Image (cartoon, rainbow, N blue to C red; front, side, top):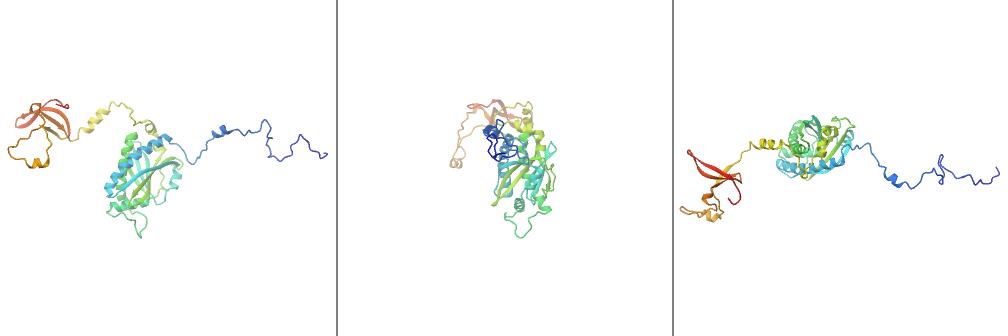
Length: 328
């Protein structure tokens, strides 16, 4: 070697195995469109529940929150507000590890699937509910342990039942399933509802009572609702007609035992209270319906038939002449 530089040799430091920039095999910098197709996947957060399904569940539970808020407010004799705060998908083990160790777990049976979901109740909320059910003023406890006795858990079960009832009605509309309380667990981390790796949808609800803002979480394992995912995804409530030949019979059977007042009205007139108080013997009140048009039969407050008054033996009776129509 004579020390002169060789123009055919690049003496710059280069990462081993790297190619020169002008090499036809070198990586080109203009790979933006390809890089944009790369999607990050966090395997710690599975997405078994489709995004559209999650939105449908959140929307359905907003209606549940309104119904449950009214029911609990009446039962607790104070304002109780419940709203949907969001949702996330996690493995069951991770979800329970993020749950407060003092929280309570209400295990709910899903019938007729014979599966289970869970409701996680924050301890401050549980204490406030028990205090209200026992006639208290809804103030936090002073100088006592933040735990519940066995008797208080039984009392709390009543409040949870008032939540589960409208929740069950919501799911009956969603997928023809209903919920019932199976057990109350005092240690969510040690209770094995499903395997730790099972994907679950954590539907976060926010409660407000007596100045307390506390979370209430509905834990829905995918395997618990997998048999009805098709119903949850494809059942529509936006005006599409679904013909069910048995629906009419079901409705008739459901309302056939309801008591309805049936009354015959010969005529009606609006009068001021002072005129009513001034009525005396011999006064004549002109009704708006002529006698020859008969009487109107009302089912509750709904006019249904036109009839002719008469007698059946010693009893007063009416004979139906036809359907009621406006103007008759």
